[in-house]
Length: 227
Image (cartoon, rainbow, N blue to C red; front, side, top):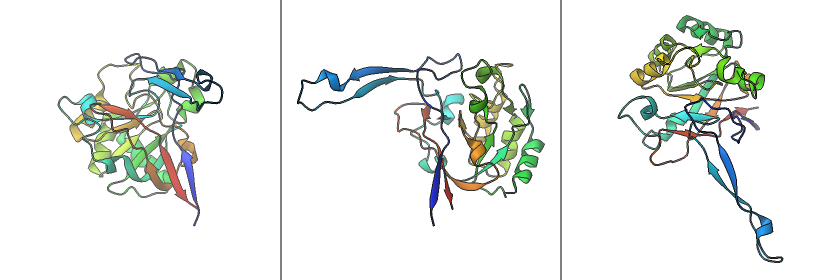
């Protein structure tokens, strides 16, 4: 049996668009091949200065819950496992997807949501808006009640293709993050290419770096499908 690996990550670069909370990413020259004398071994290497919430990343519980786990404290199996992806591309800017609508999206996917699953929400946001103001303020959200619905069904982590599951351009109350803190259900932000896996069950891998201490981490997220 062959396997196909689909990259579910956004590029991390100096052009990465971030919530105003966070400093822009810098990728700086450290050494280059031209630094070495002719005939000597030479190398390219960079210094990377970035928020741990730039591009595709995962939040630790302690990011939004005082005194809670750092990213290195969280079990590594939180960040990989069986996943399904549902379609929310029909919802427009400013819309908060309800629990009932998540349930409908799961039913429409044709997949069964099982305890311990990872649930991913396809909005195709990066491909539609990257490089424009709408990337930061043109997306739908995942409601707090939807977080409770997921937690009640044993979802272990969820993911969106936007800078936040909250409508951060409309409110600074962060109801979805608060629900995540209450239910200990964290999430990925700024995923990408989920349209490639809508309606499918697959192995998802999005491991954080072992940063100590840190309350989130960039990830290289991928879907692994048997074919």
